[in-house]
Amino acid sequence: MPSDATNEARALLLLQDEGLITLTDGVGLSATANDIVDNPYNIEIVETEAASVPRMLQDVDLAVINGNYALGAGLDPSTALA
Image (cartoon, rainbow, N blue to C red; front, top):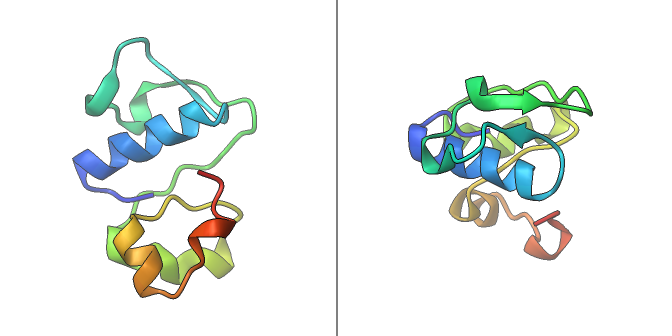
């Protein structure tokens, strides 16, 4: 997931919205990986520069990628989870 503060929080909130993790109540856009209170699927959170996330796809099961980087990498948005 992106390592910058704004995109990290958005990525964590997305994972929570999809039922993959639970964050501290009310944390909102200040969320960090330290705010994960439940991780029932034991997802390993790896933070990296947003632009490098698309290049990591072959090495991970799940990635949260900013739209501009996903499109730039030729990814099809219709295949995205959310």
